[in-house]
View (cartoon, rainbow, N blue to C red):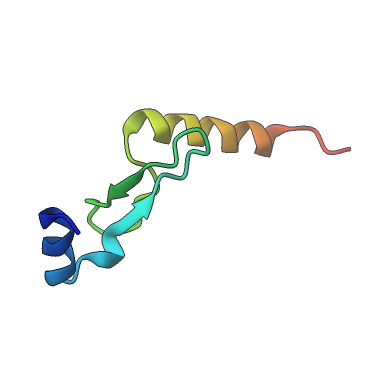
Length: 62
């Protein structure tokens, strides 16, 4: 275990670790958002994920 991982575990910050929501990325990241609900590792991945969700939502039904 690395020193950084040990520090996170010791401080009780494990719930702030997550995987990027962008399927093309999937990298682990540390959530620095205020409410702890971050989904992506970077703004680039966030934009791609939002665009993908928008396209899926706007597809015609049928």
